[in-house]
Image (tube, rainbow, N blue to C red; front, side):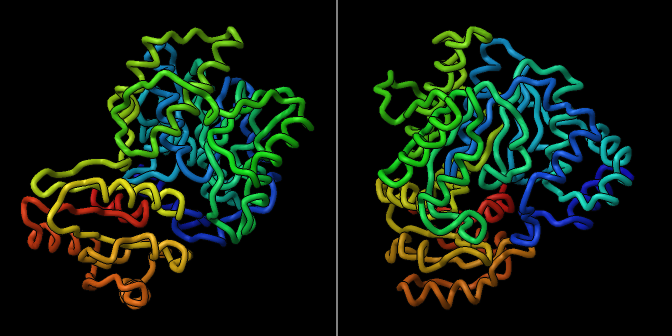
Length: 406
């Protein structure tokens, strides 16, 4: 199979949470353990940082990778979901895994995957660990896919665990209280491995403290850190929290004496995240006059910050291109959107995409008014036609809406 056929097989033959939702969620790590044993446990051959959280884990992972690259290390980076190409998930020093490696890995192990009903995510994790081990990376930053305790990445013993924050998201898997979700995310805390908590609340802090104590893991609360302010090329307001989390994580790494990261590495790493890692879709500007911003924020916590940031912009009219997935709690997220905007409702082009007419109907109950479009690109085209140079266009609601624009 060539690369296109290989990735099509991965996407179509096996459940993939990114497109199918609940049917792709596994209830334990049995399959993952089976897989890494089959691959001769590549995860044991690499040093890792493990990053979980409701929001910010992608940005945090990319910042960490960028800083470590600036410090001269060979850095693996595993993240999800991808925006355009599967290979975005697996990079070394910002360069995506080759199409040949993906094809060879899948073709070599295809029979095993089929016999053991491996999920898309399990295969992807196995591929990443195998690639990083074979390429002998100095360190790999591994982002959790969903939750923590039962996530396929949770078979590693990292140098440091990171939990960015806790918000209400994916309640059908993780629970519908902050305490329950914190319990799932805290599942990445390992015996005697330090853990950095980016943000906490009165509900989540006791959960983290108890789990850290049970594992004799040193715990650091990054939001309590009064830190020197470093600038970054990632522009969203929410990056302030992520930067503190990153700084605390680097401090913990430095204290372990295995890695040496200097202030200059931190400074240049934070300023060159996009260049070093290829990260996209975080308060990313696509145009000027009118200003066009896209952002992958898609749950209550992330959208609250982004909507607040929009209100700080200067514009005549606000245009919002909005699409969501069908398991999104609209009663929770739609009230966050401003009423004084023109809406362009659309459906992201994946099986999980919510029909634009349903989104439109629901949005009108929250006094959000606009038109329904057949596609994300059609909505964007119309917004560009209608908007004047002094207007502002925002594209979001789902990672997949942003992916189609990019």
